[in-house]
Structures are given as structure tokens and as C-alpha cells.
Length: 69
Length: 50
Image 1 (cartoon, chains in turn brown, yellow):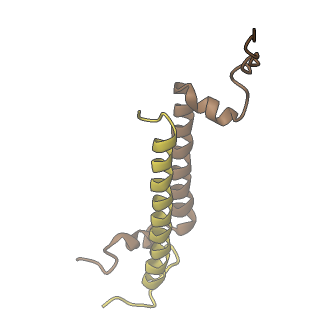
Image 2 (spheres, each protein chain N blue to C red; image 1 turned 180 degrees about the vertical axis):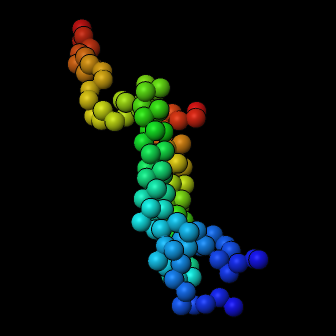
Image 3 (cartoon, rainbow over the protein chains, first blue to last red; image 1 turned 135 degrees about the vertical axis):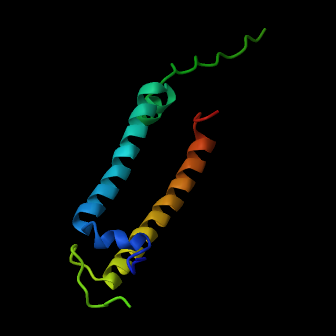
């Protein structure tokens, strides 16, 4: 018979929150880490971005004054 | 009618399950909203998907 426990909240009557919540949050965290790891290892710009302000180019040569005749 | 005092195998009553699920949904929405903003910023300011 259609239960009073119908609906998504009914899950907490079957799955204990002490199991379901860590499982849910842990899955979200795992996916986030996997996505970042995948981007990190498959792009050039993402590692560079995480590297931060490391200098990538040599400083521009000093501008020399134009020769005056 | 549901028995409001019935304690289900997880140790929760129906009202408690509904309250808990409300928090779960709210947290998911907040997380989702932050994620949407983060993805917009990532798209705008990184080479991602360009």
C-alpha cells in the first residue's frame, strides 16, 4: 500500500543518517577531487594556474634611449 | 494515518526524517548555487571549454 513514507525523505526511515550522509557527502567530494585531478593532468593551464605567480617569462630588456645625433 | 510516534528502524520518526531531508535539500541547493557561480567564473577567466 502506498506508504506514508513515500517521497524522498522516506530514505531516512530506511537508511540511517549516520550512513547515508557520509556516503552522500563523500561521493560529492570524491567526484570533485576526480574532476580536478583529471583537469590537472590533462591541461597545461590548470597546473600553471595552481602554480601561482611563478615567473614564466624573462623580464623584458631595458629600453635603451634612442641615439641622439 | 501515519503514527507520528512510530520510530523507524533508522531510529527516526517521520517528522524527523522530513526535517533532516529539508536540511539535506537546502544544503544541496546552496552547494549548487555556489557551484554555478564557480563554473561561470571558471568559464570567464580560464581557458576551460574555449
